[in-house]
Length: 406
Ligand code: XIL
Image (cartoon, rainbow, N blue to C red; front, top):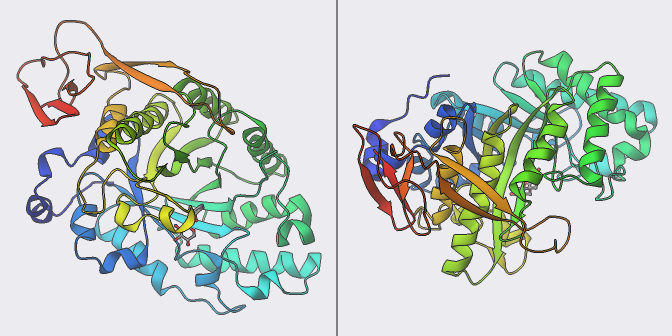
């Protein structure tokens, strides 16, 4: 995958020098840094110039590959919207994460209200998976095969598939996807499995049950729809990722956003930056965490305000495509791996409100006295690490939160 991006567009957008999340992700050993893209986003003239930079090397269609849009009536497929996202990935040499095949949401009514038997629903499930996966065969780096199959306590969610087929619908789905595209990485994807607990254990049991059934599963997607100040600690996220990779599967952060109760404040933005940095660091410092995807990168097109009343500003870019402190938190996290110029220590500061533990991440310098490496952080509000750079780089102020060795 060679990221050849339109230089002119990046220059026109005026952020070439610092447009580098994907570059930094690859330098840290990840495959990509990416974002969800919805078809409607593309009609905003500011969207593509901000997407087609070295910040992004992967995209996920936010909606257009789901069951409802792809097979709105049984046996009749519509691929044009999904094709638009797939061809955008191709044009930009981006990895494409395809999303998703089996989910209880965004289903056509012939599925949710049909009178199914075990046999007929298995046939319809296999037919759908075969039809959709075959259409994009060879184009998907990964498929989210089954999405959100679990309740919060780790038991199976009651949905039409579970009701008629039982838990076997999951390995059946993975086997059908594997048969249709042997090269796509096959993922189970869910939220609230980013930290150890009953639901994460449930997801590990899903991995094991697919493996026990003799089907292939390659990865688990940790959605990571978080709340500012309530994200799991670095230690918790790393331990959790390790519990998945110990089963022989990759992990990826697939839908990262960190929302806040509005109105936004600079204190919330600073905490949000810390929280983005923590999750990014967890992935970078976990062997087997292959990449990070934002669930859209700009507040202008985020799903959050429409879904969580009174909440928003969850993305690293604001509604005017201006980078927020969160952007620089991600960058610092991407530079936290082996050979990076920072080390992180975490302290749990309070008890969890619901299911996740708030954490404070403080960043301290390597302290070698030799200066930060190329691309490394060398200053910014709250920064206590190195303030000089190894030769021949110089410490340049990017914004009040972040200076970088360039
Ligand atoms: C969301 C989309 O972003 C919205 O536009 C849509 O209205 C609902 O779905 N978990 C998932 C994603 O796996 O598919 C969801 O995407 C967000 C939660």
